[in-house]
Length: 239
Image (cartoon, rainbow, N blue to C red; front, side, top):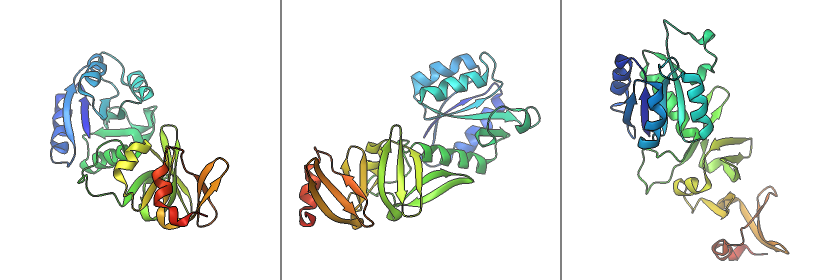
């Protein structure tokens, strides 16, 4: 997780740097004291996340943040002084606001949420160890979704839907990023837009339009035409 800090207050930047210094998988790649510097630093440093003071001089933090989030290139967290602008007076969701001085636990929650929304952000784990859970935004915070409980996964533009027996969860990710995180012996990618839980596959069926896998419960998921390896792997289930 590469982080850029943007605040006129050098003390606030120093405090955040000390909070982030011992966080695994986190690197502060730079800082800005003026809003006019932020866009250029993002292009030069390619951070995953920006902590941005809403009253940073040079360019107002709110329209700047809107432009950054609209680009889809970076996660933005607003910062404001608790003694100055408060939650009631700030036109942003409270969940997107970090009050200064930053509390370490709050910073950790914001970083965890950014990772959950964008799985393409590198996670602090050994690449050879598949994840056993994903984290999805919920009404009261992050929700742990155990991989073992996922029936199938469906692409939805810049997001993916994690379908379980009880409900569906949405996270920001690409299918390729998920493929690097998941165990193919557990979750099998069957097309450009779908994964399925291997243990739930009951049959592989051939139709006029190609192959589909039937999951326990009756769900049918189409196998991509370029995924012949899936057909080979499931040949024993062909009906």
